[in-house]
Length: 112
Image (cartoon, rainbow, N blue to C red; front, side):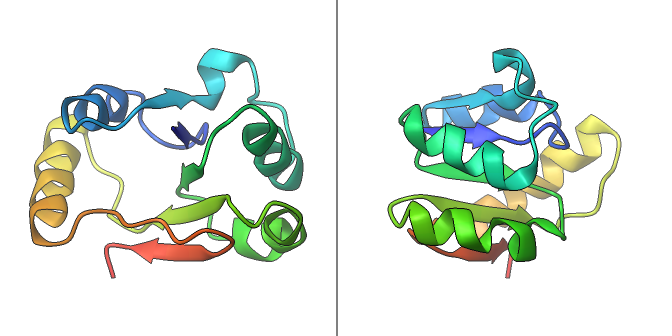
């Protein structure tokens, strides 16, 4: 189960679900006020395996939380922020070229 950080467009939930990926958004769970490290810890405790984020600073802050939760992964989405229809097209094209492949215990960048 993947978790979308508060900085990821909620429309992405339906795209990921259509791809067969179980997912939820942090904002839907009321987790929007959590620090990055606490978000990772809470997500891992609640059965999530991956956090999708646009927060470039999360890597440094969440490294300790990832070390504490080695089965959890963080994926930094690097597609430029655009209006949803454009972002959707970019996301699907990038996914077709190389789907997101979270690595447990690590922060990875997607697309590469």
